[in-house]
Image (cartoon, rainbow, N blue to C red):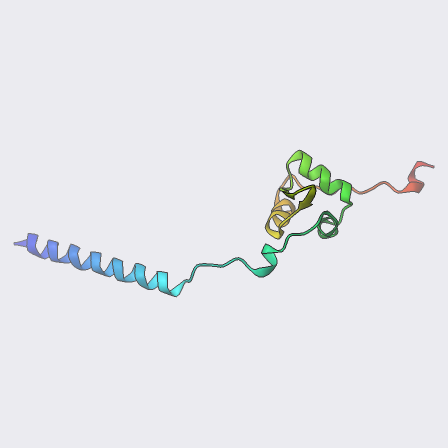
Length: 103
């Protein structure tokens, strides 16, 4: 006697799940990347964002801290990659020694 009720309950539960999933899909549109995230930054612009010199940017690329996108001989960086480099534990800015420190 409980089996028909159980089957009805499972069928209704399945319909409710489908309806909720559909409503969630409609309520949350697919996130499109922001316009500034698609803008490629040059080495100079990236160095300015990281507060370091151009040579340090190239060094971060060599050791794998920063992801580079090459177009011909030029190197470009995307904002998401720059922010990931800043948030990683391996990023540490080493201060440049001043010219007067050697005296």
